[in-house]
Image (cartoon, rainbow, N blue to C red; front, side):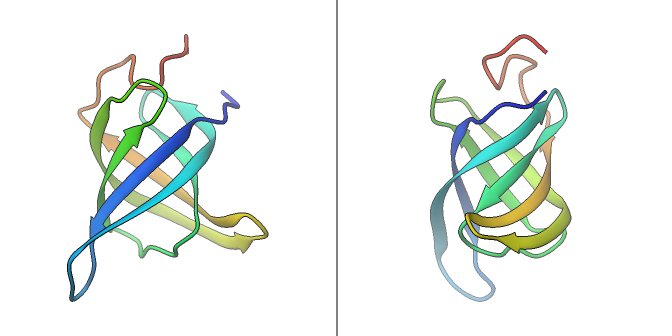
Length: 91
């Protein structure tokens, strides 16, 4: 479903400390989203996604990486064991 949801993402850099950015989704479903991030993340990068509208968080992994667009990097993100109502919309 096309849905722009504001999100926060957290991940551990290689090497380095915990990193934090905000982004948004273009598409959401029960299994993940098409995420737009200001930072490029690698395939299989593990991260924590927080839906800023509902304040729910879930672990996730980058499963697809697209090209950089004018508003950020497009990435396919799979949620790991998230609540079915994670996005706060009827899917």
